[in-house]
Amino acid sequence: MARKKLTLVLPPSRPRNPLLLPGLTRHAGPHGNSDKAVRQQMRQRTRQSLAALLAGDMAEFEID
Image (cartoon, rainbow, N blue to C red; front, top):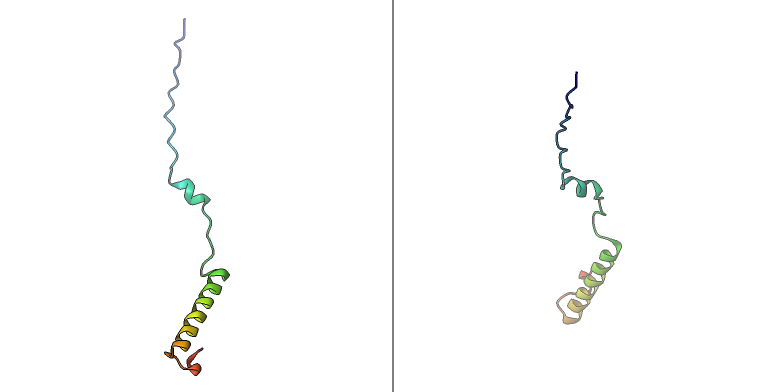
């Protein structure tokens, strides 16, 4: 007796979620201002205070 060939049918594999991989590879960055940004803000405030003082808009004792 001859046996029939058995055909094995496998379901197609599901495609990978393209939105999942970037989320897994991301890392949290620093929160808040960096030291460089803080220095820049300090320089900017100093320039603004000096300009206001020289223009007479601010008294010397008002500067923090």
